[in-house]
Image 1 (cartoon, helix red, strand yellow):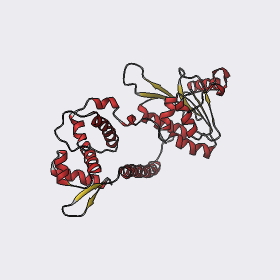
Image 2: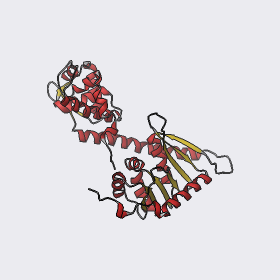
Image 3: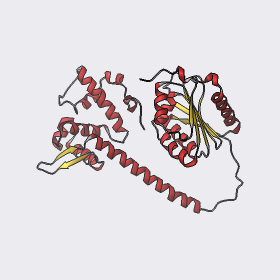
Image 4: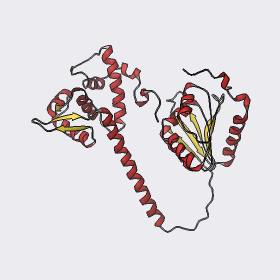
Length: 319
């Protein structure tokens, strides 16, 4: 499931207004004109799109030159390695190395003729190949985990009394927070409570969280309840996800804390720094019973208080 603006992939549109030498090198993949110092308004729009694509592809561990070579072939069709090297101002030997790496990743193929040429795989297929390669890598890591766990469990253990330790853990960035949210979900047996802003609801929607929730809720019969503020974003997400036998409520919670509580005694308190920094989201995970129970009581009060609910008759019709 994906929802959001393409600018989330990397640079924003304002970034493209400050055209750098690296950006002009990227523009060569769309226009053959060399030695540029200025761009037209139309080219600036194309450059913004190219920068977003470059930013997204580099997340698949492609170098900037590998991205440039792929985009050049996608734009101008089959080309000789020599022609690619000249057009993109890279050494011929380096061009061959880049083409071989792209070929191994399923982004480029050879045209067997004299002289030999290279052609790009269609963009949709290229993205599919990159994603599948990482899916296979994750699958392999999961197999390694099983094997390593068997090895670990084969080691002798000391007799120790198990005690429940109450701790805190600070998580930085949406990736870490998303992973921890999924762990809370996986450990959930019967109840999952969430009070989320529409923004937090959106980034969880753009992660695997709600896909996993759909499976776990059906398998275990988990009672899922969500409290969120009414907005076009929250309305869209709640229409798209499957809560099973669960439910949601629109409340005026803009100033309230955002959190996720699992019935196994764990909670995730979602926060965002407001200190003039980059606004990087973070969260605090804890299994302190007192704190978890306090937030569970808070959720119950907000859920049951009719004065906080947004009457559906007051909700404006969507267009």
